[in-house]
Length: 423
Image (cartoon, rainbow, N blue to C red; front, side, top):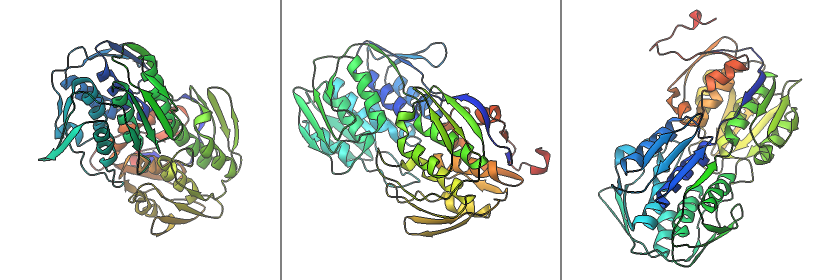
């Protein structure tokens, strides 16, 4: 429940990145020694991945703060059941490490995804090029390889998890692997840094060609997860929409060039340091056009949040989504709050209005949840957002952080909460 009208003001810490944490956790499968990870966010997706790894025989020890130690000395199960995969498609990231380390893997095919197709054919194509024999039967991927070998892999499409899976597999392959048309996201670099600390030989991470020279074994290491650029961008967009003044610490402005450029275009005054960002908004935001594309262009994971910002901006904005075919589902919920949005194919045309209305809305996916929170923060009256379990997959304690910044927000477990009771 959110009562709108308060500008966000104050200082908060940004958590470790969800999209970097999950592949780094899977990297523990590549060695018999202990992998120590710091700055691990407390998220449902992380909890699910840890449970999946424990099911395989990985020992998990929780340290102080957001630290975790994983030891995969003995892998007892090389199969991943559907019930572990259905809630988190990133479970496919165990395929490459298992195949490289144990020579076999059996993983349930990931289920459908609300925001669009996420085919795994590039994962399979790459592993087959490295010598794996892969079959799909009864909804499971069965993969076997006595020893993976290096290969030249040209990805048909840019895929982050595909790049990560093949990188991890290649670290223990015999010979050199070259991945062309690789994803360039910062999370790829973070995984490469972790693997390098474990003894892997990787060049080119962050570019579209990554070269991995296989080694006979990896060893234990310590790695600190990068800050979450999407959480950072979400709070910045919220502050911009509400006319706020916030200071975000333990983040990295270098990860957000496209987002910071658009916020500046909207009228925000932004200052940055090595690990902090200060945003101040003195005026009503200006409408901003954007088009999503793979990194380093504007991220699809920030599209929904900027749509909410545009709903109350001066002027008319055009947003084009090029990554996922169903990533405009939040439009109907924003329209329940009186937003003026028209959709034509994969493009949304948003005409800014003076004030959104608080309403009862439903979250359809993780980033749509964040967009509805931003809309609620600027709306008149109370907004009730259902199905916030999506939020807990990717935002650590978001209502607590927003409360620190002055938002009137609270979590309720009532089936039919009464908005008149929330002051």
